[in-house]
Image 1 (cartoon, one colour):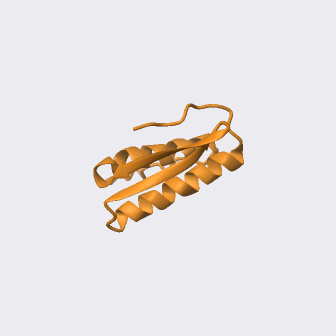
Image 2 (tube, rainbow, N blue to C red):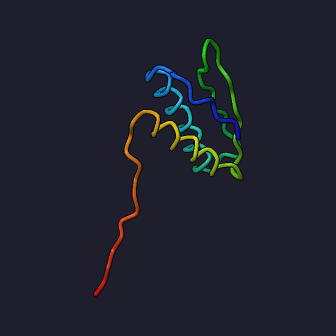
Image 3 (spheres, rainbow, N blue to C red):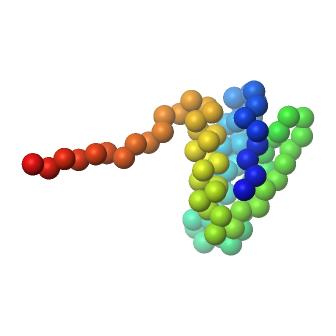
Length: 82
């Protein structure tokens, strides 16, 4: 999986990249065989194609973008009985 370098990208660019990645994830989850993510990088754009087998990598990319945008990571809820 290719992930853009953690550079000082503007928040608007990161947000656009996140929206594209989430749309690709949704497409794969709804039965698509491949999904392409096009994102801004520096002064140009780059495209990456994901397959259903690579959905885990796409999910990690989405989580990375969310972290870089300052979104809180979801945590598992720990339950104790007794």
